[in-house]
Length: 309
Image 1 (cartoon, rainbow, N blue to C red):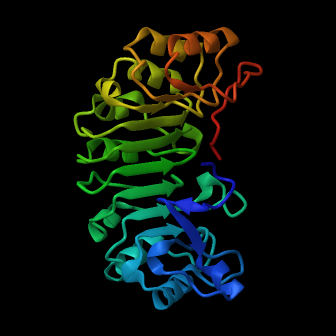
Image 2 (cartoon, one colour; image 1 turned 45 degrees about the vertical axis):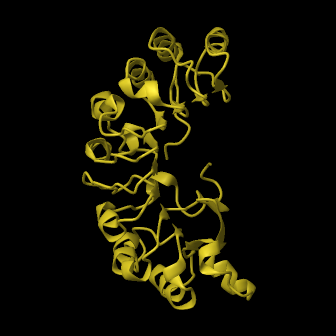
């Protein structure tokens, strides 16, 4: 998944964009058969108007998957908070199980320009939510939460606030299987450090975790060194340290740490490893699917993450 196109599939269902469906004039599919995308566009109806039409036209009691697209920018006079609107409509969405908040491509708003808010109320309003994916870290807030339903939590950002990382780390998520955090860079609010990740790496609050991504970070070498001795790694099937500024130093730490041969997949794409280190990693993990694509070259000793602005 990347951020230059809208989702075409989510949670195993094809995406139906309400605005596009209205423009096409075709009958809407059964509510439970699609992941519904609700969003507006420049010079189109306001987001709350589109959401209102969705609530009127679709049997929302049958909707299980919802995608929130563009809802306006901070400089728009009619800016709304989609979290607040969703919470207010929670009784109309009793079977919501999967939510993507911020399916916004770069032409609509750069990832670090997306104005998010406090997502904590979503977990109370939708206690059956088992999948939450959020794009954008600007203004994003979260308190530690408790959820026995949540199995997938993904946060895509060019800069994930440390307070949010610490909240995730302090949450009680006994059935979470998949966690992805795009940590980003400090210039765009990504101020988390390795100590903030310690509760996640210990795995004590995440007994079911099988897929972990700590990605898109300018401290990727430090994260790799911490992962090398992290207790949670022993039970993982998939590990991603991709999209960040991983150098030979971080890869050396990984190879010198605990065994990784039990992994099914190790994702290191977008990295700054030397050719020699690339071959060492491949040779050390012959039975593991290792993604070492997007080998970048530092120019004037400058390195960069895959996604920041």
